[in-house]
Image (cartoon, rainbow, N blue to C red):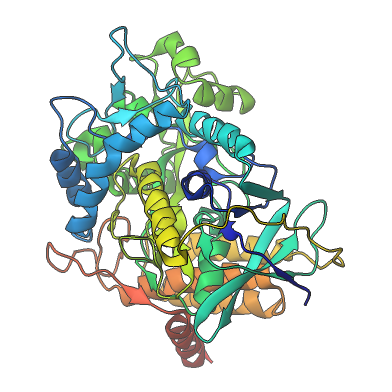
Length: 523
């Protein structure tokens, strides 16, 4: 394998967490690895709701933290919730200064919306449902103008290089126009910010590349993983046969949109006192139950928005048009889809992983903020908070910044086989069938066996191994947690074991041992 030496901090990923961290690292030289043209393949750009922050004078960071802890079903680390919510306002002001055009009222105040499980309106938005896209647009503009930041587009990370227990570099391959064999980039520090795992499921709102590879490569290098079983399913993905499924933002329900069955009858008031604004796991299971019963759940925006949806929520309106739906005249069919992974690589308050030399932020990380059920619009907030903390900690660990660094140029690398699409499709269906919205022991055991068979179909492909590693961790952690808590619902253990839950911690070695034991039992 060819080796490239660089003095640049390598940032793996190109979403909000990655770009924000790179800007905070400046003028320290940074190399960003972006699998796609910058901004086109990141989950952050698809985020519709916004960023949660106590911007109203009548709101407070303490109230925001309380809502976060309550939504997390007993698995949130209170100190982390307090830390993140206390920093939230500062990041909104920072993004505003960077040019993000947040919605403002005539007096200059931020227009705030209320989303599920928030006790008040505190979600800062851009043109209704354009927050992710507009924040990314602002950050990309600054990235392009920052001379210390180099971006390699069409390049993926396939693995981490570890020497004497420390991460010293990253194995990379070209992804465009075709996949290549890898080479090794040695670097003084690596920041992993490569997204979540939603694409491991057959029905997801995530971009196609977001299939757990970032978590998997760190786990394969030996990093500890926390809360892998906690996968959040968004209750209102637009059910129109597209992959990925377009998202009907939670802000629509914040505006008063209702969930109805095929006969137009609401079903959420019977499921929870907060009805459509109940925590996401409750709404997702209610929508899933309607789907399983053949009652074709749908979101009805007509009474509260009518034609205003076309301008107030342009992304949703466009998704409906693309799917042949008219939200002004009719309802929007919805389904529960894999949306956000609360679990990930375990980190401390400075974004350090269990592996020296590796920092992690964004959806790839598990910080203790989300617990078993992420509070709406806390995802982008967490990415911002820990991206900046990671940048500061990396700076402290490396000492004074080197003023310049030679740009990294990848050598010519031979083509290499991509992951087999049939194996990926089989993996995604197995995860949906056995580790989806509702789980039980037999289905999780079948899923672990299926993952092993998928892995055996292409055992030398690092991308597939990264996917199966994360899938194994999710299914194994779900099998080990014999209770229902937040987004993790076990039909065979339908109750929580007390109000306070324990965060899970697992290594890939432990998850593989459980997978092997399950296979031996079935042999």
